[in-house]
Amino acid sequence: MLYDFLLNGLVNGSLIAMVALGFSLVYNTTRIFHIAYAALYTLGGYLMFWLLESIGLPFLISLFVTISIVSIVSILMEYLVYKPLSLKGRPPNTMMISSIGMLILIVNFIVMVFGTDPKLFNASLVELPDLQIASIATLPSLTFIVNIGLIAAFVLILKFTRLGIMIRALRDNALMSSVFGVNIFKLRLFLFGLSGAMVAVAAAFRALDVGINPEVGLPLFINAFVAIVIGGIGRFEGPIIGAFILGILQALASYFIDSQWVVLVTFMVLVLFIMYKPEGLIPERQRAY
Image (cartoon, rainbow, N blue to C red):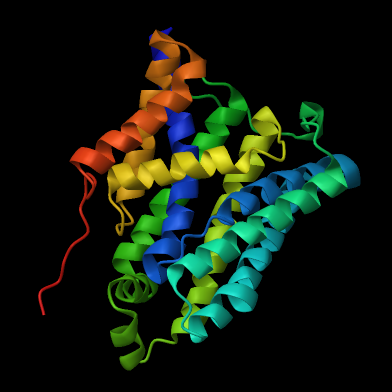
């Protein structure tokens, strides 16, 4: 029984890792606290529902369209909101308030179109390969494999490609990156699109498994933020480690106490790390100049 809970914790950890990594792409490189990222998760789940259930498109086409639309919306957030504010030299608090505004706007638009009732998928509409990891069902197993594959691909790109070098350079020093010929705003647009794609994949597979509702984005965003604090703010590897630790801790809380205590355990972990290890498990490297 405990074994099953731990496996589910790993699956949940992979979901949190995808969202945390996508958020880190934006925050580490721009220092924008992108709360509207929660709305992109909700949007991805509802788009997948609309394309599969209402329009009747095949699964892969629905997934591709969902990723494309969420990525475009994410890019538009940067191009229409964050970039103009950055050019005007607005402080981080202004960026965060603008992000909250976009979160409210998108979630209320979703409620206006789809209503507040949870949406569940018709499993017969999706043909998936017969794939299971131990006692985990087919869809969570596929979700875990896809998440792990994409996370591994991102880490390899970050470590061993020119694009990865540019991303890390932008994270460390945006001014020096521009001096060496990196087009900062084009790279930022790309990173917003990539982060949107990552959250769209996570939302689409999760919604297929457990359904979707308008309030689902913010709790997962909070989990992702806690994972970033655990792993280390400013690092790309940290959120991955922090997400799996958090996923397992939540699974243990559900097993030994009750699932109603998961939120309390999550915030207790956040408070403990902020008080006693604010730099996280993998602290951000400080360069000596």
